Figure (cartoon, rainbow, N blue to C red):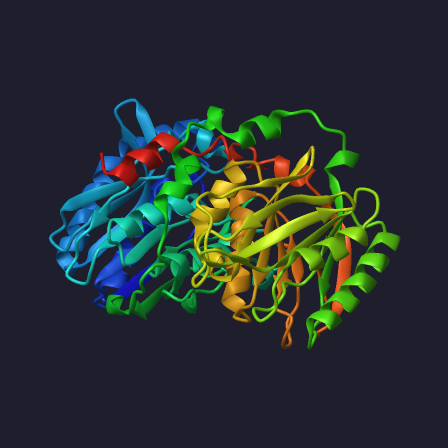
Length: 524
């Protein structure tokens, strides 16, 4: 299948007439390359900041139908599918939409942006569509820009069979030079979205600056089902990118447990996170000074010896939470070790001690959170192979104001786990990760950013790797050295994880539409 991504130069709404001409010219130029599918950016017509010139916007609206007709004719003339972002009035509603035409020039669908970004909500209505279109190459789903930040939306498209997800975008960025422009969705969210769903994702963006304010990323790209970017455009040039893909290369997704994800479709006002983010706190009670420890060992005795040293030194450094490395599979997390660690603690310091315990049905993978008074609580895996898994995704209160949830290895690849934990109030995700694949890091950054939570990665104890802590934007705030033994400490300020506003108008919790996800999940 041959794709053509049209990366347009952004123009203000006052230039809508020349924008319409350029759209036709660019589609014709793309058509000469004989692609099977042409993708244009979000709001290719007329522009993104519609109300920067209300009179021009009214004029542009009057020409919308003509643009739709002309693009449909071009689809038929060149016998190619086209997906184009456009501001679309339907009755009394205005949608940030993407229209889909088939090879005969027939309009076969409209995707309407659901997760409105920033000032989108000042003029657009939130859409609730999740359609997959059959093509001779395989099923194709369509989402619009910030919809890619919501795992439920791409997940719904994949559940309906999509092997290619087309994403018209206006990704915004900031930098001193075009070469430095970057964006979370480009860096890690959309690659992670492709991998977790086992699909190709094709992203068409704009370049340039609209109204001397909205700086577009450019860098239109295609990522494969492993999250690898196959090809991309420049950050600042209007151009057309041709990419060949084979949808037979799509991957199976991990086995899931839908009964554990009810929080995803629970009304927002009933969720624990809604109560937590509205509560009153002092700044001090939201801080958690955290020591992340990594070391190798040849025996359980050596593990304990090193643990005692780090527990002692961590408490000298006033650590509130000390994360010890997970015990390797051949060693068991027994009551004697638990008691030894607990006795080494003083005051309110909490230690996270992870490993396998024996149960009547086999081993279970757990994290015990310990204080000087004993066991504060324990959390167990829910989706790991070869062990007994818990039948619910739980969170634990480390303090009256701070909650934590856990992940183990492949559980990072299932977005519903971290989504459910966040909706149940988790401020922090603690992930024990034995993968050294760089794509896993992108996935973990995505889990932090899509849920606006902190994520602690405790790396495997063997080999060259690093533990790290990521903030609610997916940025790294600290790391251990690239070695087999090191500890690093820093503040986790959960005021940032309780502030679920990404930009004005875009909220991690209140911007979700659980009734929409429930309807699509149940195919009502």
